[in-house]
Image (cartoon, rainbow, N blue to C red):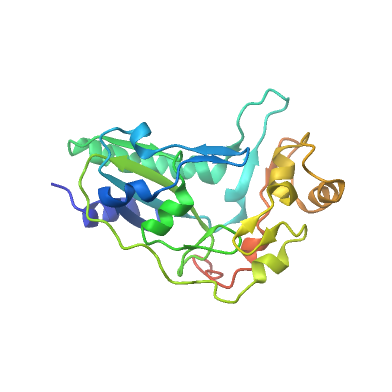
Length: 240
């Protein structure tokens, strides 16, 4: 029988910085369904019917290069490739294979609602910019999950109001895309650069996106993190 401490120790050993577990009694608390026109969160049972626990894995993005996105050279509709997502998924499969070697079913995924899952797993709280804030790493964790048939001890949900009265992220957004705990996706520069033909994006947002988004090559860009950089938590984590 494997326990949560052993799984966490292995996950930290392959490079994750924060690990939490959601037990079977709280798996149903993870929301499912569409998020605007961006994504559809799948249910854990749909991904792995035998799921009894979910291991939430936080990878610390300590350098802006992790936020690079490679796009296609045409309008084929092919998916983008985010470096942090590729790294987190690669490492999460190592955790899944570890559990499989012990005789359990396990699947690595980013298909569930990872932000809400990270809160349920005790890793952090969703900030006013909607990204999960960890007390140690601020908003610089990016998440993947491993669904498993192993019955693991769960962690208590994160309940601290980490933001309090702070509105630094809201105030920092140059396009005014944020309200506390809400984002107008049509005003977000990341959405704008990912959707160059979208009529939802205003001309003023397009202009700011062209000025402020960094493009290492003709077919890549670095996601805007202005609101995250304004967060007072985790500014020195993993640096210096």
